[in-house]
Length: 470
Image (cartoon, rainbow, N blue to C red):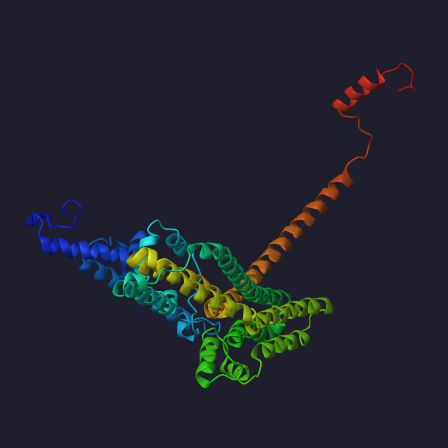
């Protein structure tokens, strides 16, 4: 223990000190705070395998750095001419129900593929929402198995429950497996379609802003700003439209207002959007009106209108997934089949296995009901996906595109100036070359030596004593 640092070597290995260090190291493996401290150490934040005081000191240092970064960002944005950029991430409390999805970055992918993921996920097993949802029916089935075993122990052997034949369950296992596979595959297909449709909306929104920033003239700067403002509000309006009712309570509407204000939307625009009946449609109509009032050519207007039509089409796909689930009869059939099949399995396994059948029934019930519950949860993907975070990242990207467009315009002006200077120099050089050619005595010149050698090789010696031949 002292060689690994678990026991203080000066005292020869105090038991209490060793236990404290061992608890600290186990905490670094099996708790969320410990895993975050390890990730901080990988990024160069220091050693996290020390005592609790070391962990507390490192956490306080991280908090101070985060506060300094936020203060720097606020000071930077206060001096920026652009509309108010957000200072902090959107509150996750605006996500309803079981929205536990999150976006993966490189760090999360590394944690997702880590070798110790089994132990890390096992430490959070009891806090899993999936376990909490499927644990009540699993406990009921385990209690049923326990009751069967207690009945067989108490009553005489002649009156004991003999159990159902396992061969019947072996024949029905294929049917239950296919039922679960079809259910989960259908739900995952809907989940994938919902994710693709929503991301397509965001990408089309970026493409629309790119066209506006590239095609609108500098004289239409106000029109360009309004176009960018409504484009930044599009994703949030679509998210609210998919997660809540059209006529939601004031608290839900206030969440939308806060989200729009965090990405630089003006208060008057927020009021107009909040009072609209169908907010995504209102934003799309406003974008179409801005395009029609611009001085663009008909071809460019048609191209931008095509992108707006794509936005409305993908919004319709999201609405179809939100409003029309997998046939309810199929979902109920799957739930009924699993429940009654698990009930019969308790009567088939418990009599021959005895007390060992109780934990086996609990495990099988959690596994089967958990698979079915996952299919039910991802059937409606928008309550699971991190839509607010995705929209916020998209809005920040739109404002960044505006800054990039301004930088490119300045660079283009510099390029045009350099090109004009180079063209002037080329014209001056060309004029001097033409004048020098005109001043020369234009006389027939002898062919170069390599041409003369080629002519002698192909046609023979061109020298002749005759003047005509020459």
